[in-house]
Amino acid sequence: MSLTLEQVKRIAHLARIEVSDDEALTTQGHLNGIFQLIEQMQAVDTAGVEPMAHAQDLSQRLRDDAVTEADRRAAFQAVAPETEAGLYLVPKVIE
Amino acid sequence: MNQWEVVIGIETHAQLATVSKIFSGASTAFGAEPNTQACAVDLALPGVLPVLNRKAVECAIRFGLAIGAHVAPRSVFARKNYFYPDLPKGYQISQFELPVVQGGAITVQVGSGDKAYEKTITLTRAHLEEDAGKSLHEDFHGKSGIDLNRAGTPLLEIVTEPDMRSSDEAVAYARALHGLVRWIGICDGNMQEGSFRCDANVSVRRPGAPFGTRREIKNLNSFRFLKEAIDFEVQWQINEIEEGRAIQQATVLFDPDTGETRTMRTKEDAHDYRYFPDPDLLPLVISADWMERVRGELPELPGQKRERFMRDLGLSTYDAGTLTASQEIAAYFEATVAVAGQANAKPCANWVMVDLAARLNKEGKEIVESPVSAVQLGGLIQRIADNTISNNIAKKVFEALWNGEGATADEVIDKQGLKQITDTGAIEKLVDEVLAANAANVAEYKAGKEKAFNALVGQVMKAAKGKANPQQVNELLKAKLAG
Image (cartoon, rainbow over all chains, first blue to last red):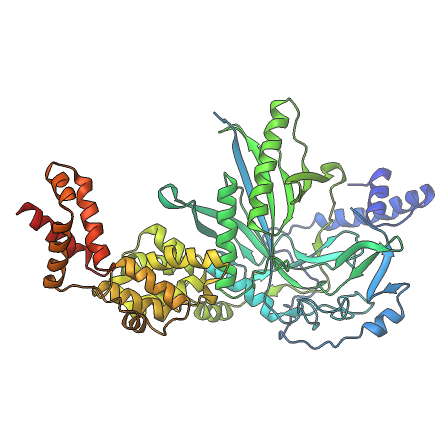
């Protein structure tokens, strides 16, 4: 399997990464290299092996339901580009 | 005739009743000042990691067990990728291929009275996920304001199969689900605050034909809007098809002011979420021990209670269904029966479902706010059962209790002299007086006019100020008139 240039541009758009035509070509090469690696791995017979969801064979640690975080809005908003009335301001978005 | 069949599936987001968020220790309390409950994890600051809330998982287990679903011993969190300012990470942590709850079913009662019927709605899945923040589009100098207090709030997304065939069935399901999540204590069900919101997938088809193309109505936060939105959407789709236009798959919004749905986005610009397992979270493992412990802590479920009401109290399917619509109604009814006695279960059911419900409805009150307590109502029903008062007088006593004119039915009956006259001699005297004073009615009755009899009964009851035992009055009148 390999990616077309169109697919590379679509993935870049979905990830909100701006790529020039030259960069798209280079990236296509890189990604297709990864696909070759995947193809090699897919040649291995994994029948009867349960797929892992994580590289480590461990299970999720859980925490108790308790409020442990205090309000640190002032500190967080001190480093935000723009705030008003306690809100973070961003360029207008209406779907 | 309308030869279109409506097909509806529902997705519900139920906010889980935790005090802290699903992956962070920030508070989930509603109504705080903007961003005062958004911690570093919720803001997706660099270097933070999610740690799963045990209570949120336990809520999912409770739900799975309550609907007879498979609770997955191992489930996986996935990233759902999209960009929006109220989603700081650029992805929502959700579950995709391996959700925590798989399958299950909810039996609902549709309609009321003679037309009521039961239907079992099959569930596809329920999965854990985090909520996004809120975007405020009012004017901030041409910018949008972002409040991330809600970001990271735990949700259970509950998905049905396309099993519903009318807006009434959809509403019956949504109400039953709403009742259930509150019943098992996993969600406060507050629809105004967005704790319980529904998306409806709607399509139409010719009966027997394959499913039509569906449109999804997003974020319906009341049962009335759910019904109105579906009814409008169904009619719109039928008109489109009958005028020769094909339905395009789309996401739509319902505008309560106009009662119409309008397109938000079509399939072409639908999101491509590129789900993949979240490397920040290990698989969620639920042991058999944990599951059994949660099973042991579950209250008697609505379905079980319903069966018991029918089996032990002899109630009809409809009555039992209505009285188990919420835990509050069921608790009130059971407390009433506890006082009035099991033999009076049917009158208890009628009083709770009819008289009390109507009075509460009139004042816009919930059953937990009822001025007449279950113990008071039970005491009142006892006095009807032992013939101290008639049903008509009972309504008076109920009204008096409602207005706080006495602490118990007995006190009201005593104070207002409402005790029923059951002394045959006393009633006979009244009957004789009425017969003597209403010769015309007597003659009419003897000439075959049945209605005249009712007039005579009315006269006796009037003379007795409504307190004579109606059955005795009837019997005595009949005997005298026949004699």
